[in-house]
Image (cartoon, rainbow, N blue to C red):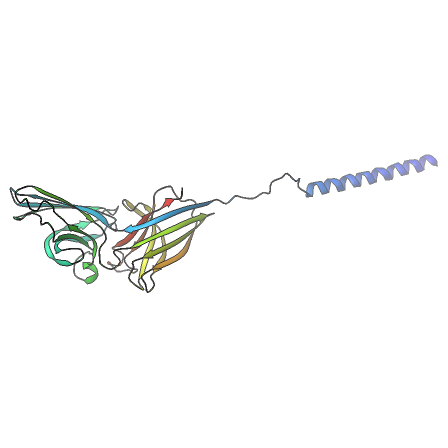
Length: 289
């Protein structure tokens, strides 16, 4: 009888021990050790910035040869809307004070990278290049019929220190850039912040026509070597002071490249030929250091 009771007690104790071990094992599985790291995916943040400058820009070279009274004009432009055409002229006056046409230049036709160049030779210029009183400008185009087409989008005054030597070869280099025409002297910047796959863009621009609206785009390439459209961004709306301050987001962006992106702002927002034939400001996207 004592033997049976002893075996029963031993069996009960074994069962209790087994239950206790199972409970301890369960508690250990549910509670992570103090040194274990939580299972989280790190989210990186990347910053970049843009400084806007006037577009299009270019250079012109004028060479006058006294022997044959020839005037050779070479114009090279960048930052034109790819595939567009633009009349160009030498005028009397200055970029500040427009005057009549002296010499009509060949049509500037932008290639797929927004670049264009022309060369023209004029005979019978007996007086050479004047010290002042001439300027070169490029028009919105594609023709010169309407006010929107005639608007100047890039301009440069011609200054010739050697004009007092009419028997010597003369060469003048001209920089083509900002103009006094509406929307042709833009200043501004943009800050870009990529977190996860969301790109936030904050842009501030001044020098716009009050209450005007402008298409705003992100492209592949650079301001000097333009490429394909990546994203049509929210159009920018200028206030009564001609300033635009906007924040917008783009989803699905994996990374900001170290180079190869640029932002462009167009003359207006619309679907007419003239509406998107002039890039008034451009800025390359440069990652923050």
